[in-house]
Image (cartoon, rainbow, N blue to C red; front, side, top):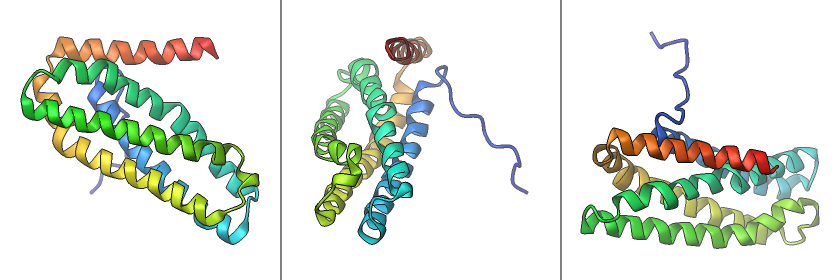
Length: 176
């Protein structure tokens, strides 16, 4: 029998668990983005399309940005000097972040102005490229980084990472 009670979401006391959970939300939003592209080609920028575009835009312009900052500012620096192999993985992940950010620069204005997209095929390609970059990045990060990080980071380091993640979000909330 399956547990009828869902597992609680990770919180800042489990920062790597939060990063893993964020990956699932990223993948879900990538799926929604590709469904949006198909929907736009078929039905245009109707209410459903605008709602989906807003949801994807909000997620990738906020939570996903925090995710990258968490890794770049708090997790990667603590592990980059651990081994040459891990340093290479971290370097590759950083390069992925740059590619994803460049793809976001192409996609973001389209999502913001979904009703002004003239070339639906181009949108589909840009959306597909963005989603594929994220999927590949997450696959590598899950397979080659997070489990290793879990074993190498001390409980004190994990606590400091969680505190930094929480503070980053609190500061952003105070600015809005």
